[in-house]
Length: 285
Image (tube, rainbow, N blue to C red; front, side, top):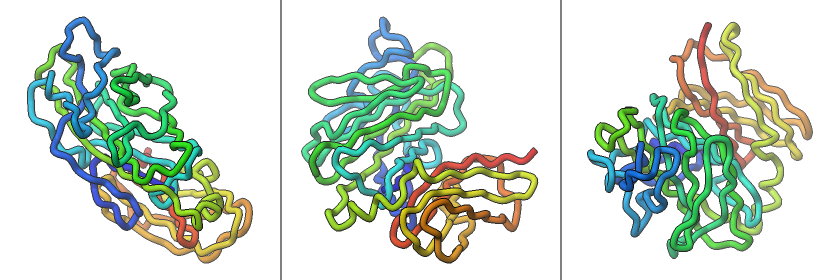
């Protein structure tokens, strides 16, 4: 299952992601209740069906998350296996004071799975749904876990609202962004195959002096390896085929033909029909 979620919401079919854009807003500095601080936000502001978004309290128009919200889901093939735990990595680009809220719902708009908060985030529940949101608005990136439902509930859609706050401690002047990510349940024929590699077995790093991307991963099967690099807009920057992987530890080095602009990129490793994606920050000294 891989998921790079680009809350910038781009249809990254080439990555196997399903991103659906919404016309709505995102989380901001404060909730409507002035007694709540930017570290304690109201539930139900993700823009999910039947919910408001942050523009209910913050002036302005809800904007597309494309180019702003980048969400990476640590599965493969846009699928989840019931009962397994996955990691989300969320970045709100070009912001230093940011808030967010996200929920995961099935096709009946009921709670699907459960979140585990990471650093700078917390969990709250409301009307039978579960929400993860920021507890520290002084950062713009978070990592947290999601455990899939114990049984196959079909598609799960994650509704994300993020806010690029201007830090003036008011409800005006904040930019609100909404995004969605849809993942599906793995078919029974794919469940065993998905265990061939997990994102925890896949690591990348960037070497500025040699202008190359280093990949190391542990594969339980041998298969044809393809590596692709995408910019934050979902445009393919480069691609290379490395032949067959070995069973066990593997190392590949992707030499870039030109220097890239400083920023966040998405690196996708494909082994046969499985795809795994990680976020990479590129910066030259």
